[in-house]
Length: 97
Image (cartoon, rainbow, N blue to C red; front, side, top):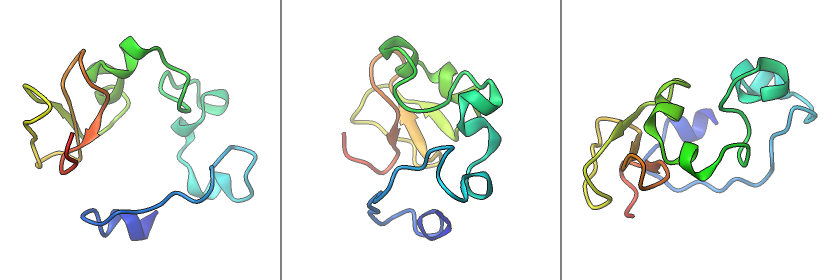
């Protein structure tokens, strides 16, 4: 992850799922990454409704570096993530949508 974080302009491929049962999970994942351990309302993928996944409050409340933009052809690269509130899922600010 540190290599990805240090090179945000590149493409990276996830080659393995990280689950709380994965060896080393407790060293790699923050406590809020797993609902079973943290009680976080934003836990693993697939646990939220579409409405929640398209709502900026879901992500900003969980500490994401995210901002709402007017439409999917607009982006704000001052943030890692952008979202058209109540319309799109979060997308990387440099990602063509």
